[in-house]
Image 1 (cartoon, one colour):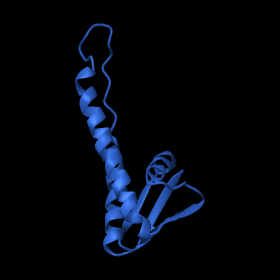
Image 2 (cartoon, one colour):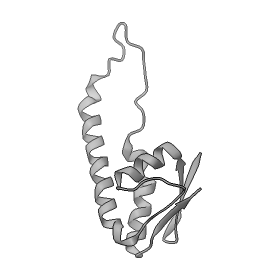
Image 3 (cartoon, helix red, strand yellow):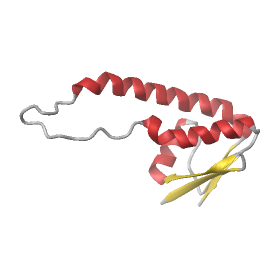
Image 4 (cartoon, rainbow, N blue to C red):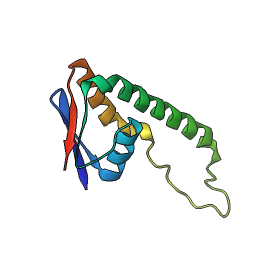
Length: 108
């Protein structure tokens, strides 16, 4: 199922429910049928999401050299997209909303 986040300060952001639940959880919210991140909560939400992205990038960099491509008994596999790639549209929305003191809402 797709979740659509809306805010008058930016274009809508749509994502699959499992990613939406993960990102909303990072910023301290629960993904219910309807929800809101108020403009008062945006500063904290942005900090939490940026910290999670930084942590994910660090973890991925540390493991970057640990893929065994080309070695015997190891199949080739692609590295999945990191949190930064998946979270930036949402992070951009949070930042735009903060600039305009706007709330972000979602609903099924």
